[in-house]
Length: 264
Image (tube, rainbow, N blue to C red; front, side, top):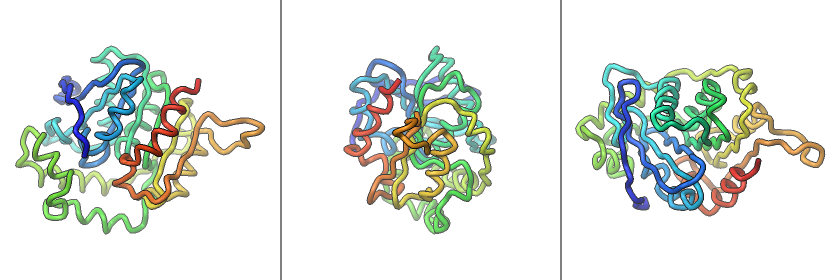
């Protein structure tokens, strides 16, 4: 995990003391991390590269990293989306791009459905909109979401070093496990109505099945014959890439993300 310059701040949103970092200057690009990830494990290698010509705002959701949990509040895509929307209001940002990874990609999709005027472009890495899109063997991986299963991993290390109450690691993993068991079934029409161009990214050995990534790409306007009508949305399947390694593939990602963000 690469060390990044810490410019951390906190904002009070929806009863949450949310942690975020700002790097670079330019048009805002929000980075939304995945499950059991903070800023470092999800985006540590990418932030210095993306911040070369953008203002990067990387945040941590309820109970993740530096952001303390609200014990009585369950974890949900919808609540996280509302929290991020509230953060944009605190920061007085009316329009921005959003890069979500894993859980964060679902949050970015929810933001686009709930506040379309806020979203310029979407980067959705390892994103599902329906539980059926998850790999059928995912249950074997989710069984490792225990203190014993994550012992010595970067996820445990990051949490123990950054969480306001590091002793809550087992409680946090239990809430994440409960969240992962919720059925996700977002209406296709709601996604089809999103106007923001999207770059959909998945690994070829991801927890998201390739067919699901293609379905999401089509719902977001992709699939036309380029010689006749180039779609505004794009699709990338990274070769030899598992879920937990996706955002570390910086050479591949930086060949596509800057160009996508520059397209008008």
